[in-house]
Image (cartoon, rainbow, N blue to C red; front, side, top):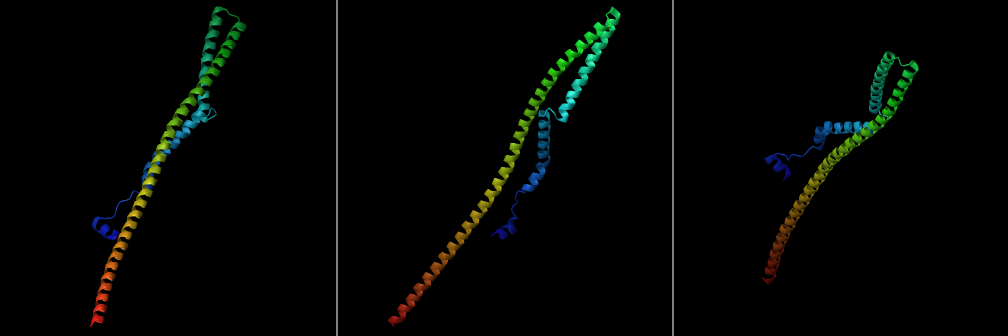
Length: 187
């Protein structure tokens, strides 16, 4: 019956899971990239975080150098001794280092929190992708099982019809034979 209905109505279309996966491949790649970024943000020794720390260090050193240059200019104009100016410059440097340590700590904590948030988003995306693939597999299995059950029902129906036809044929033939044999003995 399948070839007949295929000839009349055309073959049934089936979902090509490989084609769907090909369509989703760029999205899946982006999920992987987002995961890499989030893990990099959470790792204090990652290239990204080390670059951020270096940039913060450079900015802080530039700020201290600017302050100390202003201090030296003011010391020269006011007649401050070079020892006092050097001591104040050293104090500025120590204060700056202490502030920089706090900024490093704050930056590392912020990066970790942002990376963790991004990783949670990635987990949600991966869960959705996993559910999509699982649902496609379940639909394929259900469709296969439905076809199998339909084939079994059709086969059982055909066998039952054949047995019903054969039974009535043999029953009719048996009655005819009995009538013939009864008729033959009564003659």
